[in-house]
Image 1 (tube, rainbow, N blue to C red):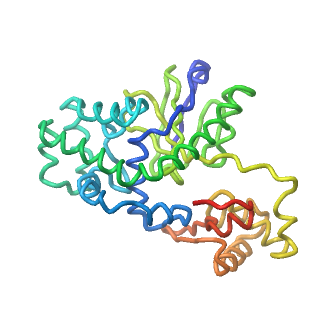
Image 2 (image 1 turned 90 degrees about the horizontal axis):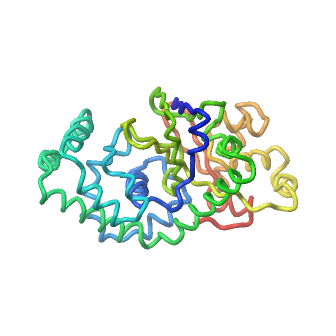
Image 3 (image 1 turned 180 degrees about the vertical axis):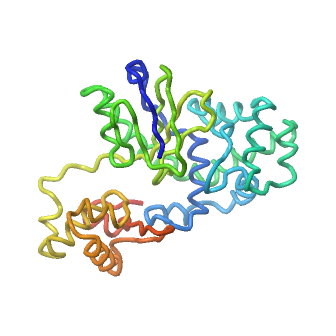
Length: 321
């Protein structure tokens, strides 16, 4: 569990990032390329990505493992000013920070030989890293950047609109169930137990296209507090709930289960949202999966469910790609 502790001053200083962050999207998209539990909505992006990024991928992958820690220096605050600003900040990382974070990364992650040169701040390897970041962005992210930016901007408008109309606390409530506001603490499911005290600095919330389930925070609490979260634009309002419209086709309960999957969830969460028993939720999800409307993957003891593009189209009338 991640718990972020706010004061009144922190609420006044909390804001939403104005643009997609190119280096956060780099790290999180690379995680998606290695993700075994894949989301169907990203399949089209994976098919389109250019093979030209293979060399960059080989260099970046050891620094950005899909599970656990990755170095904070790869996602500097300066990247909010664009890719060039972000890469310049990566190359200017103090040697002490490089060494400390790479030592932390090496605990449980075998690193290539050149990581030692990177930890020493050698100019040549730093520039290779800069080129790899630039090549990866150009070949893997840039072809889809317009869609990524539009998705993030839609989410940002939704959050900032709520903040302007209703205040920061009400805006924080719009993140449920991914983030849960229990004043004065913002909570999220997280791989480890962690408490972050903002201490009057406020929080920068960064919507991300490739952050798909669990929000991500910087480890170094001396850095400006940042929380990256899955960008989820509001769905267009419809004149009626889709469940009654789909009930004659699917049945009332199965339509309610499909509607509950507008947000990816586990079987337990699905049962709670749809108001059915755990066994009933599992059975209906299996039927919808066989129909190609739902994708399910197992992680440890939990089954995770998400709408496929076909399921999303049936529910909302809109294609997702």
